[in-house]
Image: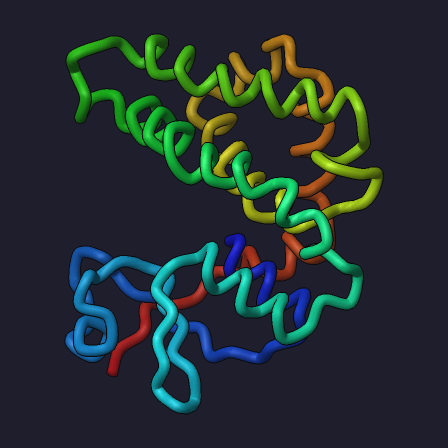
Length: 187
């Protein structure tokens, strides 16, 4: 979602090809042997294989509201999001694949990061300012996934600012515009 949002925000038109990760197209694997999504293939056949890098590239092309201005301040937070928080999210979301501990243990690991976000949101409407920034756009899809694992728990958890932030971001026209479902692409 973060790659799609950044591309849409930057006004970059792309052809979206929805793929089944259980039946990865040979063409995709030729372009990106690691076989993960998203993959952005440029007109010169340059390939960008990570959502964060796609988002950064898109904003380097066109950033009308200055989202990247606070990106340097947020580098450590984004790294934590994409590292230890993503690991806790995956274990919480797919707890049956990680039976060493109950899902609640992984949720508590993720809550360390949620607490940091709540503290930031106590200072501003968004993570680093009173306007949306790169950090908000690249972090919130993961918070959305975390909240969805147990929506009843998340709605009752003591993260009022984080809950309001997530509600606001998921209600934006930008987010809604990239949530369109596509049929699986066939060569």
